[in-house]
Image (cartoon, rainbow, N blue to C red; front, top):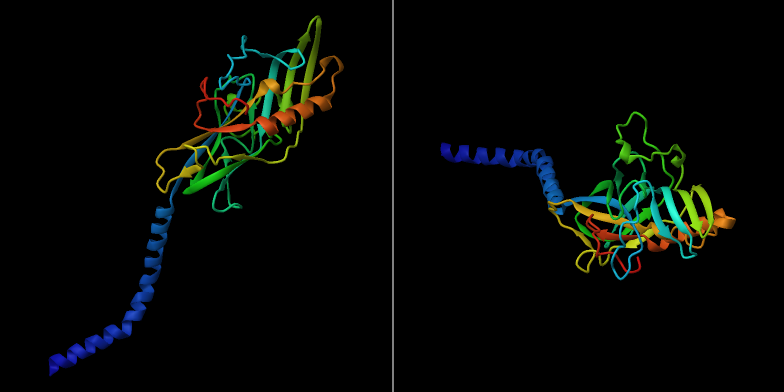
Length: 279
């Protein structure tokens, strides 16, 4: 009799306090579930690089256009022989777009400052220079969005290696800077051009980037993925008549090359045989 009464009382106490116990446990259970969900969704890191090269012929990059370390040499389509002594192109923003959520963008963080200036002369042809990286949620990515924008030097207090910043203060606020001279026959003309060129955001397709399909980041991506953004700088001066120099002609040509011939590849080794025939 006494045992039955004690058992009944214990059962009643458990029933009375069970909801409170569950309320106390609920945050713990919810947090654990959230952590598990994040772990399942996962993702990985993507590092972006910039590279430049001569125009490929039949899928092959030309020999290095730098017979001397202080300049690049190439010919324009109008027969001018160019010695480019200095050249920079600034990148302002980079983002990846998920295939399933067209408006969802993941923005890159620059390695130094809020922009990056690619050194056309100081960095060897086909050599990829790091721009920055992002952590990307798991999924498939179909497009890379790129802004060629105005360059800003990092704060003086930031520890930025000299190779990561232009060796010319005139690049501040500029998108492109080109200095050198052009020769045709007996005529030699010097040019010095820099511009706050503003281009529309480029949308570069990634739908066939990886084994014929979109860039895929797995839920537990253990390896940093690398993407290189490249361009043929030896076409920047096509159509420019240096004997009657028109800044507008040069602006139009540079704009057209950046808009139409910028391309992307998976990895950061361009090599000598994997360039597009017509990037």
